[in-house]
Amino acid sequence: MKEIYSGLMSVDDFFQAFYQDREFFRQHGITHIRKASLYFTPCDEQGRPVMVCDRTGGAIDGYETAGCYHSLADLYEAAGDLEPKTVYRKTRGSGSGRGGGQLRPTPS
Image 1 (cartoon, rainbow, N blue to C red):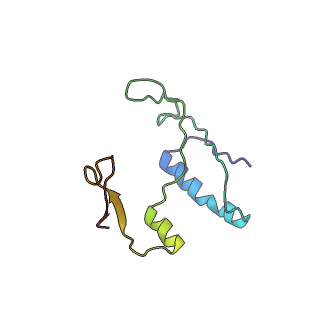
Image 2 (cartoon, rainbow, N blue to C red):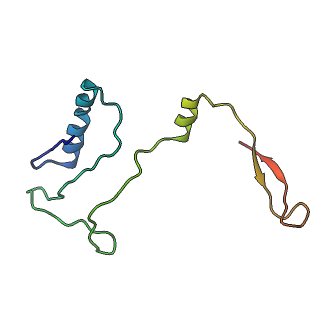
Image 3 (spheres, one colour):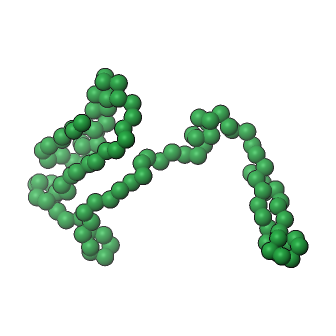
């Protein structure tokens, strides 16, 4: 599937339009997407293309992201696993002297 946004718009306007278009997905029963590519042309307020550079002045032609942020708390809640647990940590310099160490509970 392909969706095209054309014309000069601010980044905020684009994201608002993109957000509103989620209704299309709902109406057509689309609940997941495997891969999405977003192509855009950065420009100034008059629509003239601009070059995006990193801190060293090198041109940036794109980036890749692993997806949206998911908090660990949300994942635990979804799994129904919110009970406190004892966490063990190996301490250095104790034990048998052969790289051993002891496992001691740490406060959670």
